[in-house]
Image (cartoon, one colour):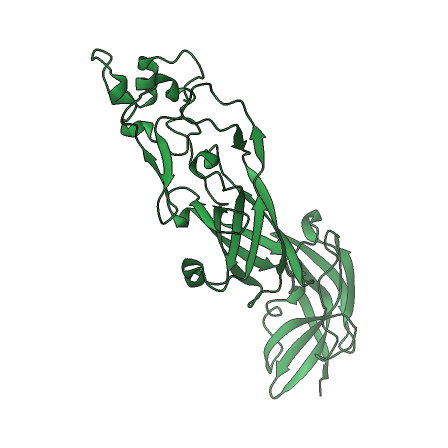
Length: 352
């Protein structure tokens, strides 16, 4: 729990630091102020100073003199460090040449301007491989964004006197990311995020390591749902057949060269419409079979529905128009499957 902004006591400071000293002991400000537990770099206020090294990592420099009890005002020993977005999946539509990605980065309450007054921006750099990201070569997509700040009244007499505090969290749209990427439906954008100036120079890492700014974005190209045939016909098969299976199409023709169904239905819709037949392999030939009491099962998104179409003729497929099982709606990346549940086999037409 962070300390308050007034009425700071040595006992309260000791408690915030994890009680490193027993209340029975004499506590000296010269001991508490430079204590390791006073060095959380993510706390906006605190004792000592914050500096960056040649790798742009942040570290705390403990005070060695001029100790101020007031520097502990609003100190938060458990403040969370800045962090990039967690790894996530970005779904983009089946069509189009580019898409926008919304990214939420967590600067927390890090006192970035005390570290470097020029760090007014954040740099998003996306790569297609982790090796390129580590080497910072061949970025695929880059974008610099201004951070948004809140004006605050600095605590009087505090070593850290900034009057602006970064807004938390920060949401940025990485605009016009080219799609599809080299491989579909899934590929990966490896993002590197850090504080920078307007020219994009790395000034401060998110936290105390470059990798704290790393995010892996799974780029997933959503697919329209389709209607698929599944399984085989009821057994036993008529003599001479090695396999019998359902055939679906968008026309009523009697052989396998019918127009395929381009996609299952309208996203958000509930209707499913198709033509279904029954195809068998007999010796060295293929046949379309007729049947009576022809019942099929529609399976979609964990729900099933049986439809009895009555008589199926070998010369034409049966038209089916109904709703999806379980009152489901068509969604991206979810396919319906058609299986023959039962039938009484009838005559046949040999396919060329």
